[in-house]
Amino acid sequence: MIIVNLDVMMAKRKTSLNELSERVNITPANLSILKTGKARAIRFNTLEAICKELSCQPGDILEFSEQ
Amino acid sequence: MNKRLKILVVLFGVLYVAIVVFNFTSNFDDISGNFMDGYNSVGSEEGVFAMKYSILHFDVLPKGERYCDNMQNLKSGEILKVRTNTYAAKIDFAQMPAETFLIEMLLSIFAWAALFILILIPVLIFKIIRSIVKDDVFNVLNIRRLKWTGYALVFLFVFHLLNYLQVYITAKKLLELQNYEIVFTMGESYLYLIMGIGTLLFAEILKISTKIKEENELTV
Image (cartoon, rainbow over all chains, first blue to last red; front, side):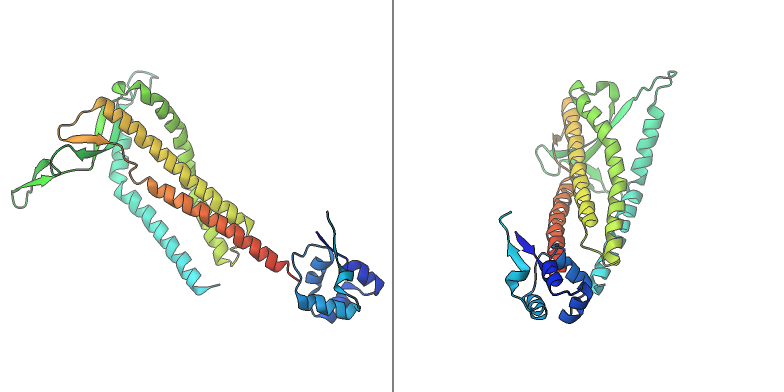
């Protein structure tokens, strides 16, 4: 399964949910869905915008686990 | 809301009410007559419920010639060759064959469920229509309502089929007609089966659509 580590990256960058949602231009509700791991899919442009704002790689946000 | 969908929903609602009213008014004489027959047949012995007659509606096919009966046309006076597909016969209740008592008992129990279902189906359809009008088509409740409607229609098919079977067995056992042969048909009950399976199929399609919608909503 895919684990979302967005909360870890946000903590590392000391960014709040509302702040990041404004910067990547998606609603806080949608970002919360992503952060809590409820999302079923993520668009490339959303991933690109998040990586750009958090200055990280997609692998820093998404992680694959056997479980 | 989609205008075409709204028109279809309103049309469906009007048609449904029209069919129910038409069915009720066209069968009213039969229903009231049968009720009075039953009411009058109750035995006069104190505290004893003794049904005297049972009405059998059975299907027939001509034995030889296709138009095997004669009937006078009162307008022209000429004799017409006619035939019928169905008969209703008053049978002495005491003559009812023992083999059908089990089906009869089962039908008596099922009749209550059928009555409940006949009330349940319009309620479910009304709720589905209301949710469509409110633009809330894809939800778990609607899937459940459609499934229940489908199962209810399939149940009505089984109920009618048992009823036809019981009537067929009874009629075959008790009657031998001059020009007609008593046959087993499903009447119009197959319509319930088609509608029931169609509704269940539609429920499955709605289930898949709801899943897709959910996935779409959870795509960030």
